[in-house]
Image (cartoon, rainbow, N blue to C red):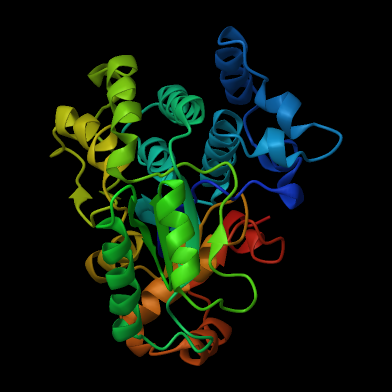
Length: 347
């Protein structure tokens, strides 16, 4: 009897390549020729190569978290980790991602080539940085025990709706991220929300540096430029099912590639990204043994775990239940954690 486990792979988005991740590609990327191809694309565009950014002597918030740099670094780190998964131990049955992680998911699932996926991620990150429309903040609606609290979530979203209705204010849900709400809007909208809610843990609401108003209608100019720059030829049939930011599944052999491009460069850019729903659909439709979160970073694992609690997956109703199950038979592997990485790579 085989002990090979099934897994849904989850690709992280912006904000996951930070100081601790400096050198991540040098440590983990498994294909020197492919990394050189990514570097060649960036050099041809007059951009710093990933090798230079990843190999910098020290991490720079201003340099490494810019959209035109962060997107390429995160995409490459994610794809490298996906390629490093030990196929004899783990059978990947589906792929999903958070926000920018959708571009990585396309490549991991085979809907784009690695090089074309890089073109998409790097182009969209660059366009976002050039426009830099609006901003983002994050605020929790779950308590420390992760017990579902739909009333608190509804209360916060009502505040968002009220602020957005004010003249000169723009504010909307950007990402439904486990126990967190990522909100996006213009300066007036973000300021108003910060004034309207009680601070939590001395950290929230937290502004996200070098982030634009992703997944809102403010990004329509960026989406339009992306559609001008990125043709349908970049997109193909996936080899693995993909769960998008609506919770919709794109199936191998049944994907309309023009529709895939339209979603990727349309709805995915300008409408809320429902990450919690994506994880819920992944759990219920594919019933994997594992959720494998690729690097870089380690922050997305918490959102995956919270999403599973919110979905009542395997009867988990709170943080304690998740931790007990995780301790007994791990269901979540974060490849950005040195102690968990060997569970995915076998090394």
